[in-house]
Amino acid sequence: MITIYHNKMCSKSRCTLDLLKENNQEVEVVEYLKTTPTADELKSILQKLHMKPEELVRKGEKVFKEKFAGKSLTDEQWIQAMVENPVLIERPIVVKGDKAVIGRPPENVLSLL
Image 1: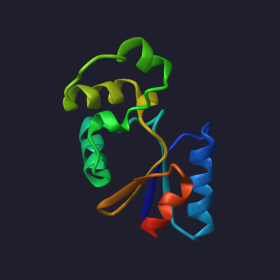
Image 2: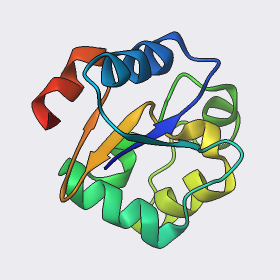
Image 3: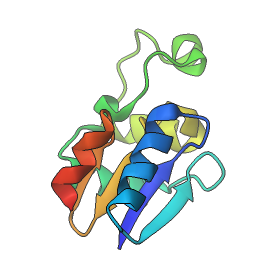
Image 4: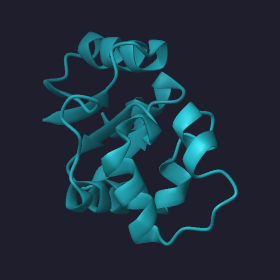
């Protein structure tokens, strides 16, 4: 089973989901703006991505520029920022077992298949 943390308003996210379906993958879709991952879920995802929390933050978002730009936060604080402001989470994130990738470009997910 593959899980995609999806934003249906994002073209890259839609393309990634389409690519998974074209490859006959059973996909659980999590619309993370509606069902925000918990801090523990984000920690697990970050481990699978081999990324630090700040690397998963979308720095072009308005909320980032208004609240976080230029600030030095701990890993725990970045995770809390993403839980409180899920729009900050890079998308789409695709998880299969103990591995995960960011679907930018969408073809990145092929490494999980």
